[in-house]
Image 1: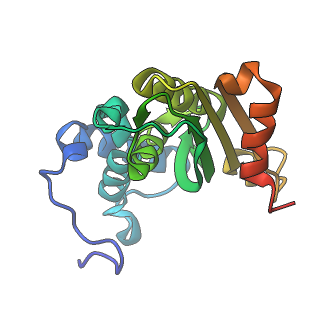
Image 2: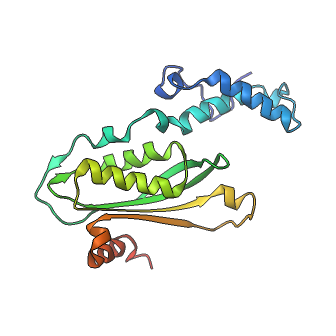
Image 3: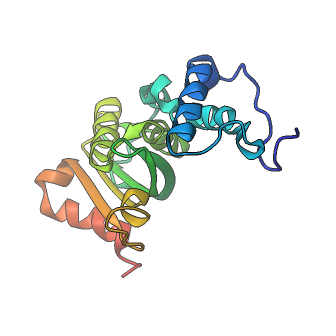
Length: 206
């Protein structure tokens, strides 16, 4: 039977597949389908365990990557004002229900001689988000990584996300938004610096 459109076969040699036990996941998915009262051998479900295994390998690929690798290369610059990248989109999985949460991260830092490539900030978000996560920890992890690797005077990370574990189950409140922040260095100790970074993030949106 042909794969559904938009679900192309992926090469077995990709990094995430090489480090994930796909067969074990497939067995588990078949058990879940049977446990909820479905027939895993039904035509529409025959390939589902394999698709889910590949999906998990992709969604949790950050478990097998070190985000520090993206911050190893930096540029020496005298620039000492705020650097901000807004609206870095991400998708992650809540570790409590294994349901997705998704949104945007805003990352700002005040350099102390080291400037990172802008795309590297987005790559750090990508790696940290592709793990079983909670938003609070994800926010802190990104901030700590930048502070450590760039030796910055300050780091500010604000993450906004919608959580499907809150919108499609339980309390079922679609449209709700969770906002978390981590302020390090000068953005924590200096009120005017904190106000500046928050103004840069939100000033033209309110």
